[in-house]
Length: 45
Image (cartoon, rainbow, N blue to C red; front, side):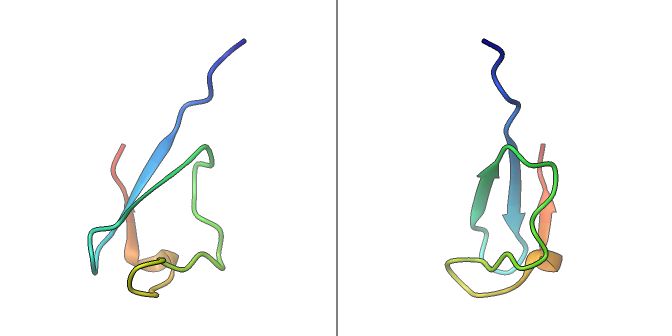
């Protein structure tokens, strides 16, 4: 069984790191700590 590569996104406002198998965040994603949208995240891997 092949493992999926995980992607990590860091919130530019508060530093929260979100891990997902998706290559981009959904348009309606909201940071659970500070409430900003996906445009305030950067991919870190």
